[in-house]
Length: 363
Image (tube, rainbow, N blue to C red; front, side, top):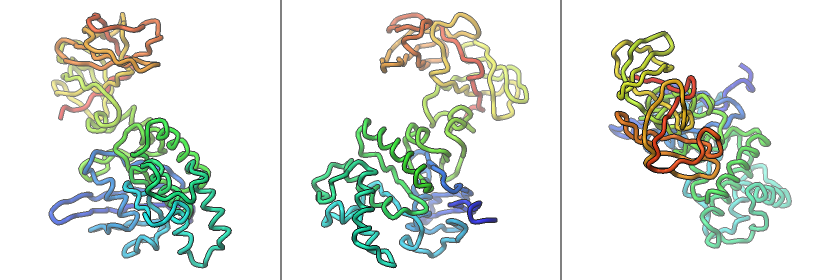
C-alpha cells in the first residue's frame, strides 16, 4: 500500500484498562489522510482516552496505534508527528504569548532561523485572530484568548495530525461559531488531519467530515454527519445526537426494511427500521422535531395541546402534550403559512414528514 493510501491514524483492536475498569473495548478505527474527525460521546465513553493514546500520553493495554503506517508503541509524545490542544490550555505562565507559541519551533532540530520563527509566530497568531498579542502575558488574557494561543502553538509546527480536546469550550457563542469556521478553513488549507474530542453534538456535526460516536468504550457508529443524524445506527445514537422524540409503540406488521407501527395512543404509521422487527415487538419510534408538522390535515395525525413555546427567531420550538404519548417537541418555521406562531393552550394537529419515523427495538 502506498504511503498516500495509508490511514493517517489507525487503531487495531485497541483496549485500554485502568485496573479493573476497561475504558476502551477492542476499538478498530481508520482515519483517512486529511480528514476532520470528531470523537463524540457522553462523559466516560472513552473518547479522550483514545485521543491521549494517539498523542502518546497513554499506552494501550492491547492492540496497536498506527500513525501513517508506523506502530507508535513506546514512542513518546514529542517523537510523534502530532500536536495536541489541551482543554486546560497548558500554557507556560512565565512566557509571553509569542514565546509560548515559539517554544516548539525553538526546540526543533535542525535549528530554525530567528526571523523564520518570528514570521511563523505572526502567521499563527493571525490564524486565531490574535495579531499583535505577541508581548501579552498569559495572565492578561481571557480564557478564550488563552485557548486560541494554545491552538496557535499547536498549529505553528504544522503537525501531520492535530488533536483537539474540546478546544472551543471557553469561547462565547459568537466567537465559538467564528472559530469553528476558522478551524474548518485552516484544516482544508493545511491538509492536516484533525481529530476533535467533544460532547457537543452541534459542534461535531457542523465541523467534521466524519463523526465517530462512542458509548461505553466502544464505537457505535462511524459516518458522515448527515448519516449519523438522519440514519442513526441504534437507539442510543438517535437519542444522543441532536434532539428527537422517542414515541413508544408496537409492531403491527413487519417488513424487510420497515414496519407498520401502532403508537401507544393508537395512531398507526409507517416507519423505517435498521433492525429486523417482528409482529408484536415493543419499539421506540424516533422522529426529529423538525420532521413534525403543526397544523397538518392529512396522513397519520397526533392531536395535542401546546404547553410551551420557545421563540428562536427563524424557528419556534413547541412542547405539545399528546394524550397517550406525553410531551412531543415540534420545531416549526414561524413564517410558514401552515404554522404561523401558536401559543400555549392552542389545540393542534401534528403530522409526520414522509420517511421521517425510524423504529428501534425498545431498550
